[in-house]
Amino acid sequence: MAKDKVLIVGGGFAGVKAALELEADDRFEITLLSSEDTFRYYPTLYHVATGGRRANAIIPLRSIFEGKNVKLHQGKAEKLDRQEKTITTTAAEVYSYDVLIMALGEVTNYFNIPGLKDLSYGVKSIEDIERFKAHLHEQLVSDHKPDLNYVIVGGGPTGVELAGALPDYMHKLMQLHNIKDRQIHIDLVEASPRLLSRLPKDVSRVVQRRLEHKGIKLFLGQAVQGETANELMVNGKPIQSHTVVWTAGMANNPFYSNNGFIITPNHKVATDIFLQAENNIFVLGDNANTPFSGMAQTAVLDGEFVAANLKRRKDGKMMKSYRAHLPTTVIPVGEGWAAVVRRHLRIYGLLGWSLRQMADTVAFHNYEPWIQAGRQWLTYYGSEETCQTCLESLAVRHAPTD
Ligand SMILES: Cc1cc2nc3c(=O)[nH]c(=O)nc-3n(C[C@H](O)[C@H](O)[C@H](O)COP(=O)(O)OP(=O)(O)OC[C@H]3O[C@@H](n4cnc5c(N)ncnc54)[C@H](O)[C@@H]3O)c2cc1C
Image 1 (cartoon, rainbow, N blue to C red):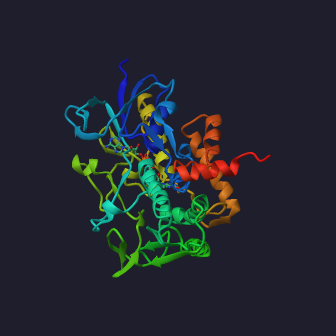
Image 2: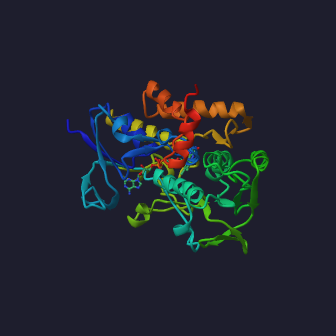
Image 3: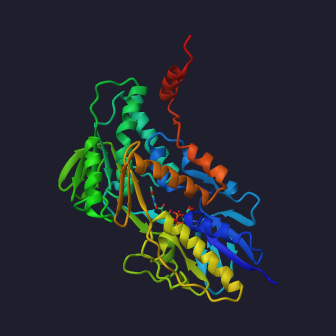
């Protein structure tokens, strides 16, 4: 029997999960096309941005698919031809399909605010993070002075997690660079009146207190109007800073509007009860208009759901309808503290932190066997710096004493 050619575009949470679920079924021929050659585990990117090891947040796709029945290709999908059933990449490579699964994730949105795109830093990719870290170290090496104000824009999970981890990291960097008596300020700017606006108000309040306790100055209900080389304009007032991190805006991947998909008022792709945008074109994860889109757990479940339905269809059964599952939210705010939220359940502090560590290991296991997932989790420990001054200071600290 001829195999169904399944083309999966996007090597993130949803796409990789769908590929892993289908690869062992020899009724399908699976191709995974992704713009990157690694899987990015976004929840720990804030940790890498504050000195953690890169390996904690990235897994090479070739290691996930080693020995598996999946053809891997790197390339950026640009055009969909519905008649020919092909995807063409920006490098003019053409991939054909019988079934297309799209999960491209979101892109950063600067809302056309002047200066932000060129001057702000991001934490959405390893490249963003390397640029951010290089800047943090450069200012310490060149002027021997840290910036006085570090501004994080966006009071969602990413901004809160970064703000929670940055004070300790900056303190450590200043020690490594032998800089004393410098009082630095970390500001968090959020346009809505409270942090974590997708979570209940009581959670926002606890997290707000935690950040204030760590010395973070909050600018709530205040919108960013522009950035120049030396300052960020917020509600008509300037904040002096050379270090602005933008975490406030995400937009759906432009591939869909560029290729005539139906886009809902909340900027997601309209799908039916099987997550099909059109016949045999499935859209998953952050791109799909599902109730809990925007969370990693939803993307994983979407990948499993579509794979299971494709197998059911091959077995001659009806496909099942999609049921959204409420994800558990875990927000770490500094080392050893996290907020865990699920319906009326709240867990704060060290226990929340420990649950988050367990959740990461389980999440890694979605993509790796247990033993590797355990090793992947262990990469949380230890640090990774490329700055020469830091490396020399660390070598002195760890040198054996007589
Ligand atoms: C910094 C950050 C922290 C987060 N923290 C959490 C958290 O703690 N908990 C949580 O539940 N969720 C978190 N999220 C959200 C979560 O990561 C997403 O919901 C999840 O990644 C969505 O999975 P996805 O498969 O839809 O997209 P992604 O995982 O983003 O994967 C998209 C893939 O498509 C590829 N791609 C993009 N465009 C193209 C193209 N044109 N052609 C080919 N390939 C392409 C990309 O390289 C990527 O591999 C976080 C997100 C960010 C940015």
